[in-house]
Length: 407
Image 1 (cartoon, rainbow, N blue to C red):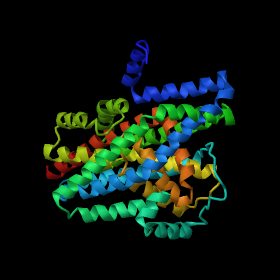
Image 2: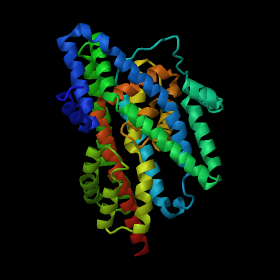
Image 3: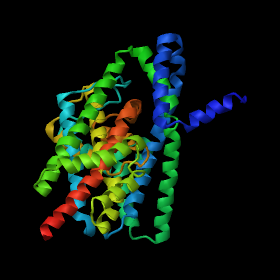
Image 4: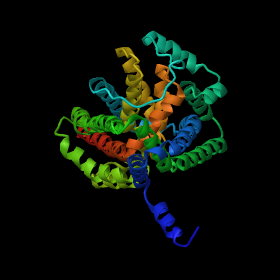
């Protein structure tokens, strides 16, 4: 490497991942416009990226959920039960909104699928039967074949069992979770090159019209998140406090959501939320527990992402979805969102779990994940802003409600 190249590499390494992905997106479009013949030659970069996601996603879900349950403190629920209920209800409501919007404004994607491998369910009974069979699958087979339902079931079971293990065993699980998360971060850092190859190959094959599909999908995602932030969450807070919720809503969006939009990490935004709770005069014993917990399980934005992208794949493949199956998807998306990884784009890696409800192969589901990374420049920032600001909003609503009750 020459001396002139080193400064360019250092500047690129200091550039945020969001900007790197945006550069990869623009580079893929430019390659198709300026040199169409070369577009297919770089498609292997997208293939490598999708393959890496496919390899790491099952292990991530298994280890992350197991470690999270095993290290959960038993006394946390008793201290913050009202906040926990708000977290869970808000996440499920967001999933319902996302499913409804996906039916009203269906999205289509450009996917490569083998119809011989696609076995769409015939209805809710077949979905439940497939779900039960996947739950009791061999754990090794589930990891090898990407059976995310089975992976989640075994992770929950082992996590509950390890809650009674020694502290050293729990520490080992926590360290293993940290190690797997580090590998996921490494894979995600390949996203700019992967997006470059995927965009170039997709546009060379399908034309520039494919970008309109991504724009429509992004509008549905962001529209759902804005609706939850400005309509659903205020309605929940009003039901809790019986007063105008919008001053508190706008305070949380301005002082927490705006910061989270740029950091794209709920965990990184925890100090900001703790300071905001202190300025709002909330009980320290409550928010010191609820804010870190919310950064892990209060994932309305992730539930929206999982639901919308999954139904986009379902609509693209022509799979019929009845109302009970849609409700089951909302529930599964809510539960899955609670296990979303703390890294940027972590919720995208849980999409195959929801896709498996409809018999969508892992290979196709990972293409949907890759599409999520393409639009993640805006989607992930908006998702994190919604998640983090809601942590403070629901904590404040529960604390103020308790003060009103005692007054």
